[in-house]
Length: 466
Image 1 (cartoon, rainbow, N blue to C red):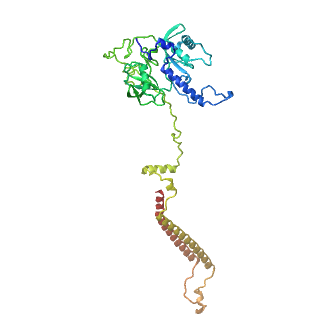
Image 2 (image 1 turned 120 degrees about the horizontal axis):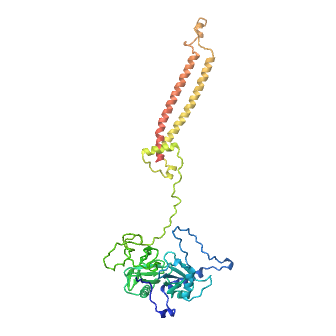
Image 3 (image 1 turned 120 degrees about the vertical axis):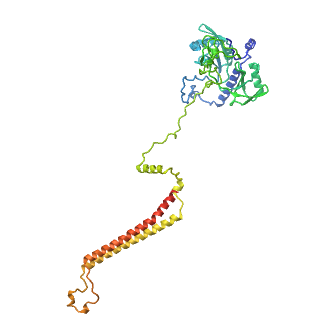
């Protein structure tokens, strides 16, 4: 089975004179130069005793993933990606054996441990990445076409990708039999204000993948004199048609090559393009009844891990306090009577505006209270006088002439009308009747006062609620 390898053809003469560089390598060189200038501008002058530590301090919280993320390679070095083109599983190779094979294939000498090149094997997609600090050594690594590791020889393709912070966009249906070098040159010449570092065809599709070093992806871009819409590129889940699994692509599959159908995954050749299908489709990504990477597949794109947001501190309700019985009864009455109106603002409840009717009722109540106090004082004085009079009258002899004295005394001694003498019992009855009359009048006055003050009180309470 034939596979198309992404890249551009370079003659042996161009490789030997060291004048050719891949677009990704040029972009990384420019990135390194910008990083060096920024570091030199912001680097403080420190003494050897206060040099900053080389250890990276990660202050972000750990993310819960199925697989821990790979450590980042230094940003000021050149990164070279290697993809094996033969069925070999890189994770089963000894890493230092792979590093030695790379040095031998590039005809390079090993460096001291502090400055030597770094090799990192990806545990899932069966690729490896080189971190090189020297541009000449990076050029030597890019010339490698095959490696021999522990007696096993396999072909390999090495290339320099764009920097990690580069943006990628797609020009749909824009390919027209141009080479990748011609596509990149036209994009760079047609858009001088944009830093275009890559442009190539996307495999066999009639689309063009554009790579830019911009803070934001532009919406429009010029290509061969035409302004085209540039849409953002989204990474798809890597699926292998050889072993029908996800995580790597078909060109780097570590298993032996098999003749499988790309539509259903069975062991038969794929039907030619344009011919009617003879099998039922099956998606490798989601195992659905559609072909792999179809627009019907909802899981074809890589899902970004979503961080769980911590709940806001004021989202939890406060703990409920015990309610007194009076409040419970009042709340039940309010619920039975219907929804209560909204409480007035604090400014209204604190200082209600004065009402003329309420002021008049308050003055009338104050006057009636004063009158009641004066009447009570007079009543107390009358009771004291009455008690003193009764006491004096019962202790003195009667000055009225009796019937026995009529025979002895002369008429001149008894002037005035005769009347019956007052006994102490009659005086006591008279005082009790007076006290009862006074108390009755006092109760009547109090009832009248209460009747007069009740409407004013209810009116004042109603005005306060309003």
